[in-house]
Structure formats: structure tokens, C-alpha cells
Amino acid sequence: MFRSLSGAQKCWSLFSRGAETGYLSGMAMKFFPIYELSLRHYSPPPPTHIKQSAVPNESGTMAQIKQEMMTRLGLEPGYQPLPKSREHLLKYQPKMEELPARAMQDSFTSAIIPLSTDRVLQDKYVTYLGSVRMGRLLEDMDMFAAWCCHKHLAVPNLPPDVHLPYTFVTILVDRIDFTNVLASGTADIRLSGHVSWVGTSSMEVVVWLEQMLNGSYKKLTRALFLMAARNATNTTAAPVNQIQPANEEEKVILAGGKDRKRQRQIICAQSIFKVEPNDPEQTLMYELYKRTTPTNTLELNKRILPPNSRWMSDSFQMSTIPSFPEHRNHHNRVFGGFLMRSALEISWAAAFLYCKTRPKLEHISDISFEKPVSVDSFIKMTAYVVYTKMNYVQIMTVADVVDTHTGNQVTTNTFYYTFSAPDTVTEVLPRSYHETMWYIQGRRKFEYSMGLK
Image (cartoon, rainbow, N blue to C red; front, top):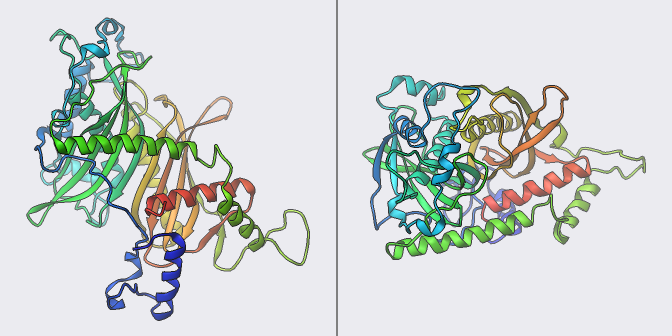
């Protein structure tokens, strides 16, 4: 188990001399190919979701959940350029003291993606190899997180014939971890989740996916969503029910939610885009400068590319996507799940083309939703390879909304993905100072996703 990246590098050099394609762990090298090499070092984290004290109530299929949420919000099928006004619901907005405390098991629910019986649905989810498109699952997870918020919310004073005076939006996705289970595109997938922590108007929702394989459910992935409760017109924050743990298991989960909130604040405050690189990172920056600067000339901006390397400026993929009403959420903005799917798919393509082989998605971290995206927008997705280490590739994908009249761009989302390849990948190197900052940021995200920080 590696305590630091330097320790991992030392271990890598030791067993590389003994076997170019093996992983030495005190066992016979032949049993562990490089593709399975993992630098992850996680101290046992606090549990994030209910495992023993309750079972989820069943909510049906994802299609049924979508319809139920529309009914609760008073929305009707069909696109309207000017959405139906919800201002009349503002007077029903409850105060914090009017909301009873809720237990986590109150929002603990599950839903099914019926891939085994719905052949039309299969076509949307299946890859050409027969596995599942992870981007489609991200869309479902985002919607299911909002459904858990609906399940958590209880407004006793709301008249039964009045629609819910709330709006739920995704603020960020803290992290998404993936198991080694290869999901089938023709077997049902079960989503489960519940609210795991609340603030005044924010809610942390844990969502996990499982698939029935060989007679038992196998976990595919787990994600933490941070959701915000807004009023009926989405113009200001709205209070939510506080959590009163129903048992010891829920107490432990709630305490972990508080710790994760503090960790999110620390990570946000330490972003390379807000504070300067630390001392070890500045040393690394100088080493990169020395490696890419010729020694026989002082010519300004003259750079050399070391062997088996690629410039970051040559390692990206870009796509401009026009959005349509089918991509909208309940509030006539572009659905966050659609942005997540689009970003993942172009990032996967960038990793595939960079590695020249099919990559495996290992981790997604820190998906931020900084600005709402209008349903008539042009969205430019750019996936950059910003860091590499051994057989891992770190991708940073930026979503910009393009003004069709001026050409100006505004960044609305940033996504970070960690992929692995079967063999050691070509090293990516920055050429400019700006790219070096992205390199440092990518390195931080990689170490965080691998459990090295």
C-alpha cells in the first residue's frame, strides 16, 4: 500500500527491473498485469450510505420518477419557450422552523433502469461492445439525486392541492468512484440513494448503482452530489428539513458528511487558480523548465520536447454542441446530466486517442456547475490531457457557452477525469506558464483521486 507518490515511484522502479509487464506485491509477478496497478491509498473512510439499518423503498423506473417529479412541481409535458409561471407558489414557501426533522431512511429509495426488458432503452445505453455507456448513467444519477431531495423534503403546512414550491439544482458532484465490475447493456441496473447531510438550503446526496450479475447485485459506482434547494421561481435559496439520525449508523454517516463539507472547502480554497503553487510544486515547475529548455542557446521561448513526450497544446479534443429542448431540465435550462454525459464522452475520446488504446474510467472528481446554461446555447466542450503518470491519464474538460453574436465565451462547468491504460502512456508536458498551471492542477486532482493526498 503506497504512502506517497514518491513511494509508488520507488516501488515501480523496483519491480519494473524484474518484469516489464508485471506487478510485484510479494506474490508471483505474473498474476498482476500493469493494467491493474493501483496507486490508491485510502485510509478507511467513514461510511457514506445506509447499509444495515434500513432498506430502500422502491420508486419504480427512472421514467416513472421523472413523471412523478413533474407532477409534484406542477409541470406539463411538452416544450414551451416561456415556461409556466410559478410565482403563485412563493406564498407557500415554508420557514425553517415549520419543517420537521427527517431521518436518512425517509429519503432512502431505489429505482430501476429496465434494460433487460426495454429494447428501445437498450439502444440508448449499450456500447458496441455490449457494455453500458457511463454517460447515460451519469444522467440518471443526476436526476435520481434530485428525486432523493424530493423524498427528503416534508412540508406539513402545504395544502394537498398545491404543487411543491421548490426547485432543486445540482451545485457539484464531489467524487464518483468506479469498481472493476463491467456493466452489461442488457441487464437491469438499480439506483439507490438518500440524503446524507444537509445545511440550511443545501443537501448532500449519495447515489450508488448496482447490477444483477450471476444472481446477486454487484456495485458499479458511487457518487456524492451536492444539491441546492431554491424557491419556486429559482430566485433565492429555500430552507430544507434538518436531519435527525434514526440510529447509530445514520449518526456516523452524518458526521462524515460534515467532514466532507470541510474537505470540499479546503480543496476549493487551495485551487491552483486561486493560490500560488506550493514549494514542492514550484520545484517541479523548475524541473519541467530545465527538461524542456535547450542548453546550447538562450533564444527566447525556444523549447525542446523530450523523447516519448507530447506537448499539452497538441493533446486535446474539442466539440461544439448545439443544445435543444430535449436536453432541458424542469426549469428550461440545460439538464446538468446532459452536460455530464457530453463531457465524459469527449473526455473518453480524448483519452482513447491519446493512449491509442481503449482506456478505463477510474474516477471522476469535482464536477462544478458554475452557471446555468440556456436551452438555446452553443456549448463548446474541450478535453485537455493535463497530466500523466505511468499508465494513468488525467483529463480536464472545460464547458464554455459561446455567444453566437460576439463569439465571446463564458465557462460554465469544469470536469476532471482519471483514466487508466493497459501500458505506460506517453508523458504530456506543458509548454507555457499557463499550461504549467493546468499541469499542476491536474497533478493535484490525480493524487487526490488516487488517495495520495
